[in-house]
Length: 285
Image (cartoon, rainbow, N blue to C red):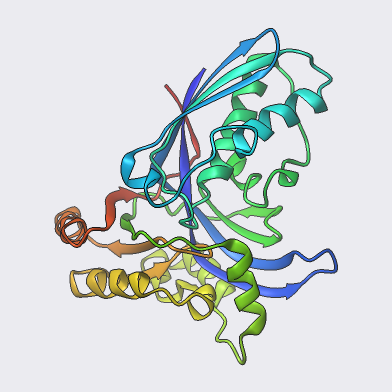
């Protein structure tokens, strides 16, 4: 079975506290976008085999483990163990989503593995957040208000069809380091996540006014600032870093302007693509 599995962005992302187990509690609006990895999976008699196809522009800056450390491998193992199955599978991942970008590239691959294995075997798993906090969202996809560590997901009004430019430089962000920096912020300015949720429901054309990300105050990367400046000068109505970084998305009102901005970013040496917000995570191909 082969699927395309979508990336996500955070239209808004706030950190609201730290839990006793060391995790941070979040308040966010997640959105799937039309930038995809391709996951191909085949059942076998035993063992888990994983192969990866990674574009050079990703591999050179963000090495992606293609062994038992990969979250897709862990997802297959998790699925078989939860269901008491002694079979195995072959997984091939063709990367289209940059890593260390705050776009859930690993989590969406894990969700796709669980989705495919579920379709192929008729079985399911629970507690997918044990694999990663973002994994449960990809079974919902679309637009969702997310709380807790990412496991409390409330779908909200459809926000698909919005034109985006997504760009990323060579710099990556360690999630652990980013959260450590969050803990050190003094008097941070919190994004208005609830107002964004209300706007998406009642006044979607104004929703961009409430896009925001607390991590921009904690993660200081020159490339992020440069990308945001280029996007804003070249027609984006709003440009915001996603996740704990380091990708940036810009919202545009027309494809022509978005295409020109993406080309300019590529000329500056950045990964850049034009895509849209989409209503679902998985496309069976």
